[in-house]
Image (cartoon, rainbow, N blue to C red; front, side, top):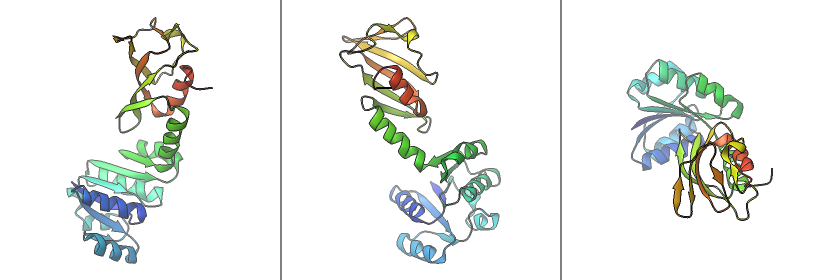
Amino acid sequence: MNVIVVGGGKVGYYLTKTLLEHGHSPHLIEQNRESCSHIADELDIPVVCGDGSTIEVLDLLDARYADALIAVTGRDQDNLIACQLAKKLYQIPRTVARVNNPKNAAVMRQMGVDIPVSVTDNIAQLLEREIDTAAIRQLMSLNRGEATLSEVELPRPYALDGKRLSELDLPEESVIVSISRDGQMIIPRGNAQIFGGDRLVFICTNHTIKQFSQKLALKNP
């Protein structure tokens, strides 16, 4: 896969190195001349010294032939512009932008960035999942990490023993897929009951996992 990486700081350098190790063909754009020379010598890849958010520099790399563009500079505005040019002018299929200010993530997605990546948000979600929802085991990531298919075994004794799902007021962005009890699988409906020892498989978005855990009485509110 031909990938253009915009930004040759620590993130860009190690990202480019990882892409190389995975058999891809990265091309790097960086404004600092010393960094350009260092990366070109270390990784032996095409490096262009310039502003990756300009048409002139992207033209130098024949951007129209790239499979993806990943913008990881320290400026959200530059990352957004690079991704917009890649998408609208060069028809690059996939764009990824580093989001330094988490508040900009939603705006970037609305303005055409395929995958805005906020390191701050990702770390916060990871900590919340590991600390607040320790009983939950993630089975599969869905929709580029926005939601997960997960599993949890309800504790014994259980505060909500015998409660029906319709009584729990679970978040709208969550669905209980199955209940396993005594070796049998139940496809639940609203009148299905839950008991201590039940194993639930469910889908939930990352930003509602804490609320979901509280509604199931898996942790103190």
